[in-house]
Structures are given as structure tokens and as C-alpha cells.
Image (cartoon, rainbow, N blue to C red; front, side):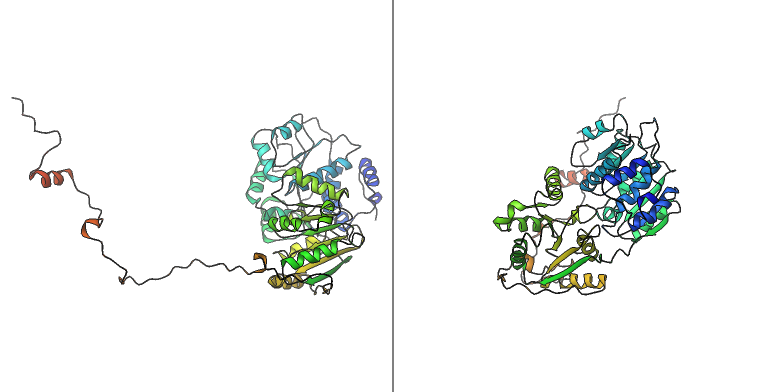
Length: 445
């Protein structure tokens, strides 16, 4: 099937042709007709299968011109990077249509975004928190919304947007079409769907926990953090073998450290991204990597979900994620659009349990690779190589009998809360009760 077989407007066919997209993916083909029928949709498909076009094509096909300034379509995403990516895709798809789209995200002032929607908009692409701010501050009216799309919903829940989503649902018109897309299906997603959706149709394009077949996998077992650094520098030195590489780490502190310890010859060819970097730094890193200004991007899992960077030749898991399903999302950054991809994973002894969970999830062992002889095995031990034991808070019973170090307080230092009345104080001081105000007044004759 091609997009010519799907009934989409001429401006969309033209845009897809310009973008060199000719055939729909499984999730796009399966969800299109259902979405076009007006039914609520819950789409489950793994990363890299084209979920963005799976909802953009039907909602844009159903869009109709209206003189009302209120937006008809709202698309919610968990991060500012995803907002910008989807916004850019909408702009490309609507290049030949009179459709006005705005984007909202936090980390910047609200006034420029308020000005962008001051004259109205057809589509709003936003993070949940900033959309709520715009509505509650009166910059945007939600009364005209006909289509609500929630993308990367499992990641949205993981970032704690539950309460904000509930408030947004309450503010939007009850009569609307809902489209939810996610890489996984969980109890939390089911609960939200049961509460706010109207008879949704579940569409699954592929098992969410199955790695893409076109991705080769290899695993190096290494003893410690600094040996990982030595192996990373060794592998990245071969520019021809690893032309475009995403290096995933589990924390922003590790991202900083890995970038700091890259060989000097690699620094001009690399950048890094995590949540503590400024918005301009994050955009610069993503756009630079997407535009091939440099070939190495070190990242936390912030970009493992939904960031569509074409042509990634290799994904390197510098350390293993806590959530085994995140491994699937990481390696899904390579091997896209029918291309062969490669995943390389480093595993230290402390990560053995995580590795077992990942291999149990994917149903097979990741092929082991021999550590190259040129890679020095480091003897340096860092805090990352030492297990952390968390102490439980427990109530400890103690013997109440005074011991040798126990000294009874002398009588004058013992504090007893006793309330003494004014009458008692006067009796102790003068031996007789003295009333406030001095002598009693004589009775008038």
C-alpha cells in the first residue's frame, strides 16, 4: 500500500512526496481509517514505527477552515524537544495549506507564546504544564478543541504529568475525539482511557517489547567505569565504522563525566544533552546532531523516546537503564526507515541484574563481544563501581533502666508542667490572698 491508496488531501500527498515518504508504516495504515471515522483511538507501537504521522495524517485530513480563532487540534507531548519536532513536522505537512500552528513549552517566558496565539491558531503543540498555564492565564481558549492527541503517553506518566492531564481533560469540551499513542500499555494508561475516553479502539502495530529485526546487538562485559571510558574512546576513534553515534547514559552526572573524559581528538565532533542544560544548549545539540554538524551525541534517556533523528548508525549503551523497556526505546533510535542499525552495550558487574531483566524481556541473550586487546583495563575504582546499600528506617527498642552514664537531674532542674493560679502565688508570697487591683473598694452608703 502507498499513500496514494489512502484518501488524504492533495496538500498532504504533495508534502509527503517532498519529504520522500511514499509508503505508510503498519501503525499508520492500521490507525488511519479508524481515526478518520471519528472514534477514539489508543495506538500502541514501538519507537521508530511512525506514530507521529499515524495521528497527524488523519487529524490534518479532517481539519476544516473556520473563522473562529480558537484552536481545533491540541497535541500534547512530554518534552520541549518533542514539541519542537512535531511542530516542525506539522509545518512541513501544511506548507501548502492555510493552517496556523503554534508551539508551547516551559523553560521560557509565556509572553512570546501568548503573542503567537493572540490572533488565533488552528493547531497547538504543547507540553501539558505549559498548555495548562496558557489556558488558566486566559491566553488561550479551549472551547473550540475538537481533537486531542496525546503522544508518548507512557513517558508522560513517568514524568509525573498525571494531575495536569486530569485538569486539562476537565477544561476541554466533553465532545471531542481523543487519540492516544504510546510505546507500551500499562494499568495507568488503561485507567485514564476508561475515565476520559469514549469507547476507544485499541490498535497494536507490533509487540512493544520486541527489538527491531534490522538492529544488530553486541555486549561488552567490562569491570568498571574507567574501562568503559577507555572502550568508548577506542570505538569512537573509528569514524568510518561508527559514522553517527548516540551514546546513552543513565544520569546527567554521568553524561557530564563521559563528555569530560572523551579523548581530546573527539571533542570537536561531539556534544551532550540532558535536562540540566539550558534550552538553547539542548536545541543546539539536537539540531547539530540532526544536521550532521558532529557525529557523536551523549544523552540521557530524555531523547530515547520520540526524537526522530534519521541516519543514526550506532547506539551505544554506556550503562544499562533501570527500566528494561528503556533498552528497547534506546536501540530503536537506530535501524530506522528500513536501514540496518547497530547497538553496542557496556555492562559492568553491578549491572548484572539489569542485564538479566533486559535479556528476559527480549527473550534472548545479547551476543557477547571480546574486549579488544588495545583497550586498557583500568584499576581505578569510582563510586559508580561500588554498590550502594540503603538503610531502612527501623524503630529500635531500648532498655529503659538507667545505666552507668545515667544521672538523675537535681530537683531544681526537673521541669514539671504545673499550672499555678494567681491566688496560690499570693498565698505563698504574703500568707494571705491578695486580689488584683489592691484593696477592696468600700461599699457606698
